Image (tube, rainbow, N blue to C red; front, side):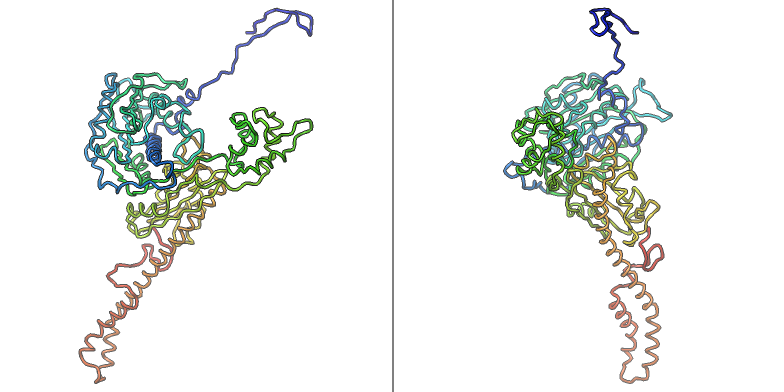
Length: 636
């Protein structure tokens, strides 16, 4: 209700001044409060993929942390050299399950009990834990407390314990205090080729865990060089703060560097071929790291390291002028620490030379009455009219493409070696496209194809495996640029049958990885499952698929050629003895031919056919399963 107060005289009317005060109807919310109520936006809805989402978020963090640790060990003077690891371990001796958890109570949230749990978890690999890059994930189904619901929307629910441990860089005490808060990330300020960059994943997982079970998050971490680690047990709040059950406390840990995390969440019954399939695909392009996954049924999935050369470190991507909007330009000027306009342009953007910076400033055309700019002008003192005029001159320039050292592809040799070892296929080929750029950021496309008649016939998602910065994407297939690029290829031109979705069908597997900081700008949603369409990205993917398609066509042509030779050989051999008998009947009157020569004629004739065709009947090379003798390779 309006509340009126009389005060001084109004200068306009001469009457008493009337002041009106109203309670504001616009309230400011917190980002943490928003996402705590809407964790489904980041992939944490009650479905089978929720298990996968937990694995995805924390495996991304662990893999990034492991890579960061090894990059930090490299001397700065040898930044360009590769990191070479010892030969891969013969085995990861993780054959026994860690002791089962009980429903955690307050007695479990102490430094000693957390240290004891970590020790039990790493016991089978204690000889490797400080020498090898290792990521371990353990999901266990626990008895659900009576206070939690039995079902939601008619679906039965179970409570799960989720544990992840890695030998990564670990966290300092100060980092641990920030960990788990929304938009708190080591990757959010500058773009880099990492698996995550937003600071939403772990925070949203913590919110979902607390929302569904009411239990806190446990973290144990140790930074390299520290004599002891730190443990912490906490809840996150809607105000983007922490409420501690156990504040950061020093504790002995069973690893010299790394992280351990435990939380509890509620979801429908776990089913195989979701989280375990995500881990399996993660091992395809992360063969420089040992991965162990224990599912709720007690099955231990082990993926040992396969290569000795560690992945190279990508550099940070500076903003490129072509990717800068007027808003970004203005914000960067207002926040800059440089006191000269020339220095601001030169040191804030890539592909910016001193001559170009001077030319931009001198060619800026100011509106009438607005002061011209000099190279020594102070950026923070520029007016809005000056910034707009400067931006017009800034984007009118032509720039070189952004540098490609920000992109680190997996590499054709590594992809082929890994896929050959996994699939044991007769045909494995990979293609790495040269790095290119879009939206002012560099990226590279890598494509691979696997074919073997003994592979199970698949279609759709069973054929195409999508990766972004070595991270598999299992959902939103047809909505992704990778899928659309693969479907745009004329696969029949490469002697491959296709289904209704225009993807190959049969004993094939296709792989595509998009690497670079560029991908962080074109994810379609916070769940990061699909890439938006981009003309340059689609073109590069299509060219990559077509390149491996040509190699596949040559291989299939050789298969068809062998089949045709085998068919001809079978036909000739089928009638070779009748032909030999006819020749013998004709040549019996020739006295120069001995009886022994006539007797050996059938065998000699068969030997000549086999030699000329190069195919023996015992080779088992027959017709295609479709019955075609020279057409496309059909589903086996």
